[in-house]
Length: 293
Ligand code: SF4
Image 1 (cartoon, rainbow, N blue to C red):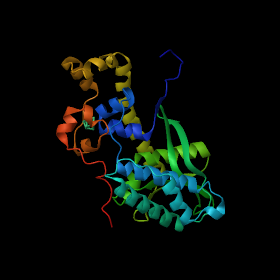
Image 2 (cartoon, rainbow, N blue to C red):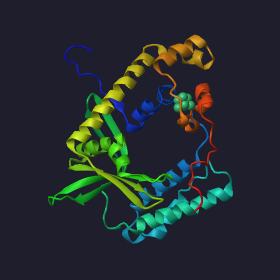
Image 3 (cartoon, rainbow, N blue to C red):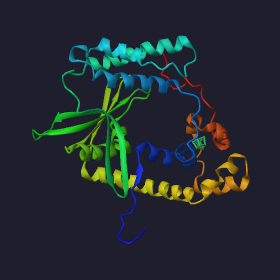
Image 4 (cartoon, helix red, strand yellow):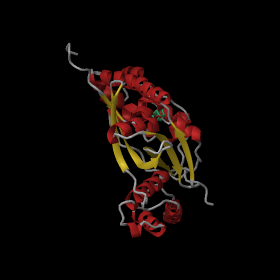
């Protein structure tokens, strides 16, 4: 770096930081080599269709913001990938439609969100953080003013707790990015679990946000150092490593090691990772769907 020149900000999303934390080799396959993902997962198809439908629901004229239209939008946005067969896909299309319909049934259609799938960004701790928030609500705060609430939709089978909302690095990053982007107070994060209709929430303090940002900076420092090594020559070994050259594999693994565990079964890059294949069996693509009620 030249004297007087600002250090270059390292750009990242919470997902990128999470990927580094969960497995540096997965980070390499995803962000450095950009290898194609494996076969689609049915639960991702469900999640994407519901998210897209809820986004589009808010773009409808007021009279169409009804449960029936939410269900119709899920059917229209349906992604027929990862299911066991057409019958399972059709069953889940209807379950997801019903889930979206009952979720919007308790919303006030006139309570226009400040943002829907809104990209927000913030520069801090040498990082250029950005991410897309499912929904940003405007709420009345205790002092009579206004504050913005970060809402994240969840469609997985596991119910969520307030602790999940409190400990989520992504949600904390969104709060500071919402503040910065929309120039309005924000501290509350909410996980809306559609299958159960429950909300897990946390009100951040300045201290808790700072703790999350410091943690983000620590993770980013490690990932950025690996990025620099990759660009500085390590990436030139990628082809040899893919061809099975033991020295190349060892050199890359020294910087971007595999981190094996039960999550390897769900890893989109498992097919290129012998250690991951040994660590966990691959579930069927529809395994994460909740059991039929
Ligand atoms: S299979 Fe496991 S060890 Fe291999 S890249 Fe994926 S998460 Fe990492």
